[in-house]
Image 1 (cartoon, rainbow, N blue to C red):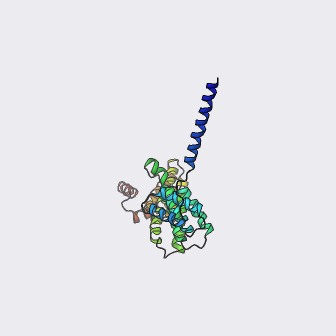
Image 2: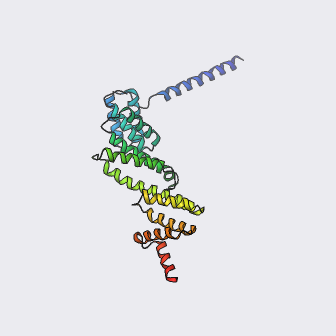
Image 3: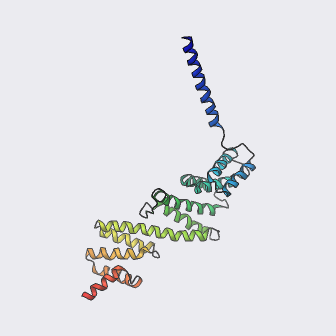
Length: 262
C-alpha cells in the first residue's frame, strides 16, 4: 500500500513539474526585452527583409510595451503595413480606422487612404483567388466599392500625393471589375427572362462605367432584351449605338445577315 502511495505521489509531482516547466516555456516572451530604439531597428530590419511575420511580432511588442514611445505613430503605420502584406486584411482595416479616428490631421493620411484602398482590393480578391486560383467577378463588390471611394478621396483631397497616380490606375481596374459584376447580374436576369431588370442593369453600366469593355456586353444584352419584349424602337436605338462603337460585334454581324435575307 505504501509503495502504491509513493508511486502515485511521484507521478503527481512529475505531472505538476512538467506542466509548470511547459507553462514557463510558453509564457516566455517571443520578443526580447530591449529599449524601444533597438526594437524599432529590429522591426525595420525584418520589414526590409520581407519577413513580415517576425516584423509583426516585434512591432506588436513595441506597440504594447511603449505605446507612447518616440516612434509610436510610425510603429502603428508599420504594423498596419505588415498586416496588409501578411493578408491579415481584417486587422489592417481595423487598425487603419482606429489610427484615422485618433489622428484626424496626421500628415500621412494620404498613405492611409491609399493603403486602405489596397487592403479592400486584397480583401475582395483573396478568398476565391487564394483558395481556388480563380477570379470570380460576380462576387460581392462591396470591398471594391470601398476601395474606389478610398482612392477617389485620395485623388480629390491629396492630388499631389505620390500615391495619386497609382490610385488613379487602380480606379480604372475597379471600374472594369464593377462593370463586369453588373453584366453578370444582367445575364442572370436574361436567363430568367427578367428582361426589364436586365435592361436596367445594362443601363447602369452605360451610365456609370461608360469607358469600360463591358459597354459592348451591356448593349448586346439590351438589344436581346428589347427583342424579347417586342420593343422595336429602343432595340434599333441600342443597335445603332452598337454599330457606331463596336462595328464587329456579334449582334451587329447578326443584324447585317438579317438585312441581307430581308
